[in-house]
Every structure is written in C-alpha cells, then in structure tokens.
Image 1 (cartoon, helix red, strand yellow):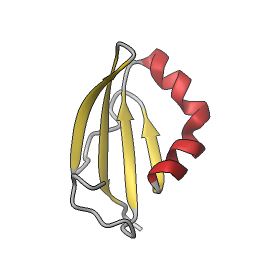
Image 2 (tube, one colour; image 1 turned 30 degrees about the horizontal axis):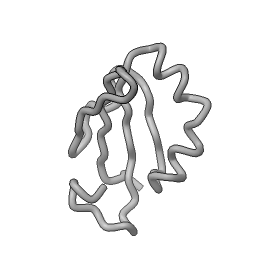
Image 3 (cartoon, helix red, strand yellow; image 1 turned 90 degrees about the horizontal axis):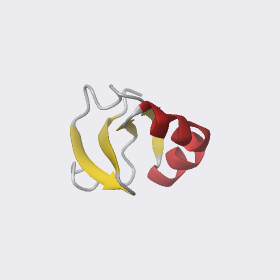
Image 4 (cartoon, one colour; image 1 turned 90 degrees about the vertical axis):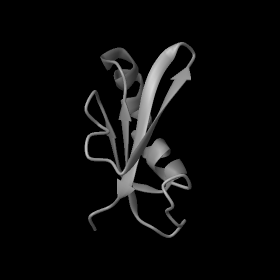
Amino acid sequence: RKAAGYELTDRIAVGVATDQATAARLVPHRAWLSSETLAETLEIGPDAVAGMDRDASFELDGVSLRVGVRRSAR
C-alpha cells in the first residue's frame, strides 16, 4: 500500500500469487489477511497479481510469493 503511494483510506484489492499448495494453505486465512491489509478483496492463486498497479516478490520459509495491490474498483 505504502510503496504504491496509496493512503490508508484508499480502498484496495490485494493479490497473492504462489504455488497451489501454498495457496491452499492461505485460503482459510483470507478474511484475516484482508482485515490486516485493509483490502476490500484478496485474490489468491497463480494469476492473482495480473492487472495490479504494483507488485513485489518475497520468499517466506522457502516459498516464493508475489503480492500485488491496486485501487479497488468500488
């Protein structure tokens, strides 16, 4: 959010692109992740960062993640 230049009050959508096994582990936590990032929507899957304004790659416990953010359409 900050790196993309968004304000705390901006409504955003977040995407997390990762492998299928990691995505399956994240899906049950979608509501919590959305709440923590103040995202209106949170997509999880291999193409979840397509169309995002900004994204970054991370490695967490040996797993590659790409997290993207864009202003929400609402």
